Every structure is written in C-alpha cells, then in structure tokens.
Image (cartoon, rainbow, N blue to C red; front, side, top):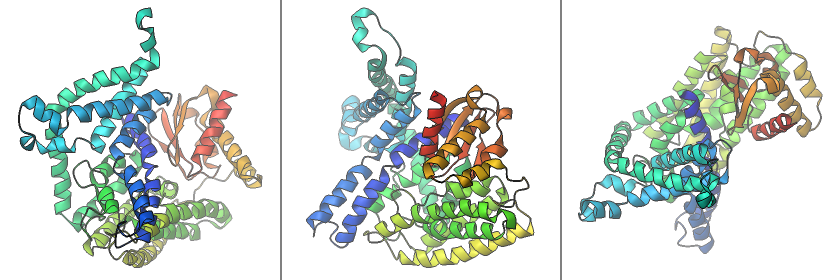
Length: 484
C-alpha cells in the first residue's frame, strides 16, 4: 500500500512540474503591469492569461499526469484515458446534469457538485484510467471487434468505469467534499497556528511521499482553499491568501542552506571535501529552485532528530509569516526564482519581510544545527563512521559531467545488485525509485560512495536513491545499462 501511495506521489510530480511555466508567464506579466493586472498592458494581459490557462486547469493536468505515471509502461493511451475519465465524471456530475437527473432547479443542487472539477477528481480519474490501462492494454477481442483491441480498448473501459464511479460519487462526493471542507476550514480557522501545523506535517511527511495528499487540500481547489491558484490569479485576500506558501521561503532560501553550512563546518577534516561537494550543490538547489530533497535526505536518516527539529522550525516559519501577513507564492517551490516572480503579484504582501525573516532563520538554523550536531555527535554528511571507498575517487577523477553521470549510474546499479536483483527502475524529480528482489543484496555503502545525498528503504523490495536534480540523466543511463 505504501509503495502504491509513493508511486502516486511520484506521478503527481509530472503535472506539478508544469506549474513553473505558469509562474514564469504570470510573474513576468504582473511585473509589467502590477497595478492593472493586465488591463493596462496588452503584453502583460497576454502573459497572465497564458499562465492562468495552466493554473486554471490543474485538475485536468492531474488526471493526465497520474494516468501516465501510474501506467505500467507510460504509454500515451493511458494519458488520453485519464482525460476521458475526467471528462466523463465532470460532465455527469456537473450542476446542470445533476439538476436534470434529480429533476430540480440547478439553484438547489448540492454546492459540492459545483466543485466537481477539482484536483481530487482529477487524481481519481487518473488512478482509474491507469488501472484500466494495466488491465486491458493487451486484451485481444474477437475478430469482429479487433479494431478496439489492446490500447484502443483502454479509453472505452475508462469511460465505462467512470460511469460507474460517477454513480458512486453522486452519493459519496457531497460527503467527501463536506469532510474535506471541514478539515480545511478547521485548519483555516486556526489562522497562523493552522499554517504552522500544516508546515510541520508537510515536512514530516516528506520521507513517505504523503505530503502531496496534504498539499492538495491547501494548495489546490480540493476543499475551496486553493492557495496557489487564488494567489496567482488575484482572486484571494491580500495578506491571507499565500499563507500556506510564504513561510517556506525563509526555510528553503535561507534556513536549509545555513544548515548545510553548519553540517560542512562540523564535518571531519578528511571528509570536508566530500561533504562540500554534496552540501554546496544541495544548498544551492534549495536556495535557487526550492528543491530541498537532496539536502533533507542527506541528514534525514543519518540524524532523524535533527530532521524533526527542521520540521518544527518549518512550522514556526509558516506561523510567523502568517501571523504578520507576509505573503509570497510559488508555482513550483519556495526558491529564489519563484520569490522574484511572485513579489510583484497583486496579492504579494510585504514579501521583503520574508527575506528579513529568512536571515533570522539562517542564523537559527546554523547555530542550532551546529550545536546539536556537536553536542550529540550526530552523523551528518562528513561525520559518518564508514570510510570512503574507491568509488568516490573514481568519480572525482572523472572529467566530464557526462562521464560522472555514467559512472554514478553504473556504480549505483552494481550496488543494487545489477540485472539479477533489480526488477524495475523509475524516478521522480530528485529520487530513483527502484524495486529489487532481495534487499540484502543491495550494497548501500557502494551506492553512498557515489556521493548521493541518501538512501530510503521503503519496504523489503522497494528502495529510493536520492540523487538530486540530475536524477533523470542517471535514470536514463541505468535504463541503457539494463538494455545492454
């Protein structure tokens, strides 16, 4: 079950990765015309509307992305089936159709159906479409129906399945919607405290991948909060909308890079060079793009108590930003790029105060991490007991980045046990996600010697190798090795 949920989280990253395009377009548009929101400049209006075409259709992106990501061989017919499934459900459960089915005026239809085009239904559509693809993509029908065999059968079965699912949702969706709204409202009613609790649990769930489910409630239009969508299209409340995003900027741009510096300064002298190569790259990724997993996984399992402290500090950061109504937003994550793009948005409120808060959090992170690491002798990067091995020197002596990626992929694959042990290879934004026959065969020391930030053992047959933002290239090289 956990593996399935993690695969779902990985699949959600495909549509989420499209959001930076919207952020760039809308951010530049608002920079050009910050007061008129596009009404005073044709170019600004063009860019803002182009970006909103992505933001406003996140549920469709989820339906397509999840269907593609969860299908066994990532085929385009699965993505098409996800779209078909979404259209069937949202049409059958639209306010007008429900009113027709119930024989009532649309004005008295349960308001839950006016929100049927949401991320939750998008994800559900994608899941069902992927199940239909995995089940029916290789089914052969009798000759008279041969045209509809195999992959052509998948959209048909997806549509049929969603008719059944829509019948169930007709009764269940109002209850689910009410529960989600109640949960979101309960957190929202807590104001800054609620934002802090969200930030705390967001970080705690990172190792499991379940943070995506939590994010969807607050960031997207599942329970009516839609913090990202409302912030970028200007339909929210200034100083309030963005409260589930703003507090991440001080942590990702300042706090975590400062933590990386503390870990470097406390590394063993003979391992400082190795620690620096990892921590510098991971710290810069956190600051510039808001991609934190390479850095977080570098100490998450080596020093779990330290990661718990990081989760608490993240909660405090969101609490403080929400308390003072300092807001900024992101299309991808809380890095420098999104901060700059969102700082002139209509709903951005005193965003420069997040920089001031970030500087304070950088000091807190640095000195607190340094104290805890030395006080309790925590095994952060560069302080591990095991000695470095020959693989590290092999990577250091490799000149070109292509050779380094190829060498890293080769060593990781050998450490996993090679063809005899590796069942499947996949990846998300920063992690290799692998299935192996026997976890005891995996040589974690050899894999770690390549300089990767960390390893996460999910189950007896599933393992994640945190590579960083170049994970796609490493995964491609491993796929080449498997074909040889």
